[in-house]
Amino acid sequence: MRALALYSGGLDSSLAIKIMMSHGIEVIPIAFVTPFFSPDTEYGKRILGVSIASVDITEEYIDVLLSPPHGYGRNMNPCIDCHALMIRKAKELLEEYDAKFIITGEVLGERPMSQNKWSLREVEKSAGAEGLVVRPLSGALLPPTIPEEMGWIKREWLYDISGRKRNRQMELARIFGIEEYKTPAGGCLLTDIQFSKRLKFLIGIKGRPSREEFELLKVGRHFYVDGSWFLVGRNERENKVLRNSKIWKYMFFTIDYPGPTGIIVEGDLIETAIRALVRYSDAPKDVAVRVRILKDSGESYITESTSLDEEELEKIRI
Ligand code: SF4
Image (tube, rainbow, N blue to C red; front, top):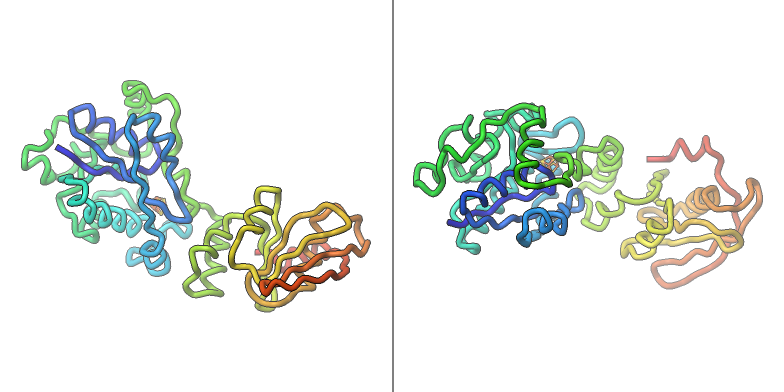
C-alpha cells in the first residue's frame, strides 16, 4: 500500500511518516515549495531514509496568499487555506504515484486556529479530499478515515496526541532514532512579523507581486519613498542576491570605499537610494563619495553623494 505524505521539514511530519512506514506502508514524502517555505529535503532524506519529491506550488500559492477564504493567522500566514492547497495538490498527485491516501503530521490542538477539529475537517473539505487524510499523531482522536474503513491501515496504529506539549513527540523521536529536529512551522516566513510587514507593503504597492519580488523580500534593507522601492544588501551573500536579481531598474555601488550593493526595483528616486547606500558603506560621515550607477538598459555613469542621516532613513524604512 502506497501513500503520499506532506513533508514540512519539522518533527511532526517526520514522525507521521515514520509511524506509517513502521507498519509497512510505502510512503512518498512530498515537499511543497514556495518563496515562503522550502523544507530541507536533504535533512528529510537523512532521517527518513527515502528521497523527498519537491513540488513548486508558488503560482497557486500566491492566489491563496492574496485572498485566503479562511483568513490569516497572527501574521500573513493563511494556514487553513495553505494546508487545503497542499492536500488538494497531493490528491492530484495520488494517481501519478499510484498512491491511495495522504498522510500529514497535523496534531489536534497544537495550533488553536488551524489544527482544531473543525479546521482539520474544513481543510479536507476545501481540498476535496474528505476521508482521505490520515493524521497518524492524532488519528485515534479523529473520525475513522477511508483508509481505515477499507482496511489499508489499522486504527491501532494511530496515536492520540493533542495539544501543544511536545513530550510525546520527543518520546517518539527517541523511539524512531531521530536526534536532530526542528520546530513546527519554524521554516515558514509568513509567521514572521517583520517579513509579514514587508509582505503587506509589497502587496499594497504591487497588487499581485511576482515570484522574483517575493524572493527579494527575504534579503536586504528595504526602503520606500515617493513611489520608489529600493534595497541595500546587508552582507556579501545579500549583495550577491541583489546583483543576480533580474528585476532591478538601477544598480549602484560605492567606488572610493568598500560598501554594499543597492538596487532600485520600482521608481526612479536615485538620489535618495544612493544616499542610503553611502550610509551603509565604509565612507566617513559627511564625505562625498563616488557611486557607480548601472541602468537596466546597460548604460552606466558615476555620481557623487553623501549619506542620509539615521532619522531620514528611519522615515523611509520598510
Ligand atoms: S505556517 Fe506557513 S507553511 Fe505552515 S500552514 Fe501556515 S502558512 Fe502554511
